[in-house]
Image (cartoon, rainbow, N blue to C red; front, side, top):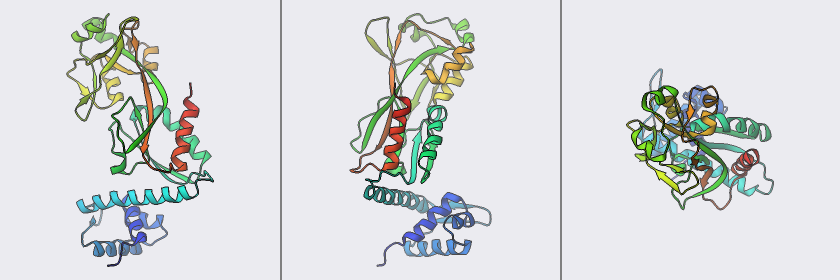
Length: 298
């Protein structure tokens, strides 16, 4: 049986990414007709329909979605193989697919992406901004930046690239209505805005004066999976939040948020670069990790 044709697979991925046969074909130097015929041959070979076509829209079938994910993984692996062969040159190239936490990504990583792109113009960047914990291997990402410690996964490698300090804070209107917590135990009587992802709540680690560190699982009727949404909820006076300092610094400065439990220690939370465990780390990934360390050192 004849194997899959890589050019037809590239045409399929290009059309899906671009959203049309015309735009996808243009990416590969093909006419609309040539791109369409390549995908038709691919569907015939596989014996399934990959795309639902109408005069105005183009969408993946269930089989098409599965096949698209496998195609992106294959092309990512081919890029890594090419990069590992030329690893001695250390020149990044190909496509860097990166998953970023929304708030950290927009405020801290975007400037690095601009610098990275200038330094290594042979790399294209596909960045996803979401606080959702993605499956790097299943979803075809080269690298994720994650806040906090995560469960050990033997298929992944993690490297701490920075730390951030958390701040416990609330809006003046909330504190006026509900009082100001003075001790860690006082949080049990307050509405706390809790980060929750995949049904797992993120605890707070606080230090009572110079005493022991305590892991606090605050009560809260509002649980969110976005740090920015938690900040916005705190600004609306919906409760007490524990958020990264970089995310609330401006609001603390202008008085829209007030730090509480200021005499208590808060945890230095690691910012980690996480990537699939492979024998050869491609230059495009290695150079981006090194850039984060360079910029965020200290």
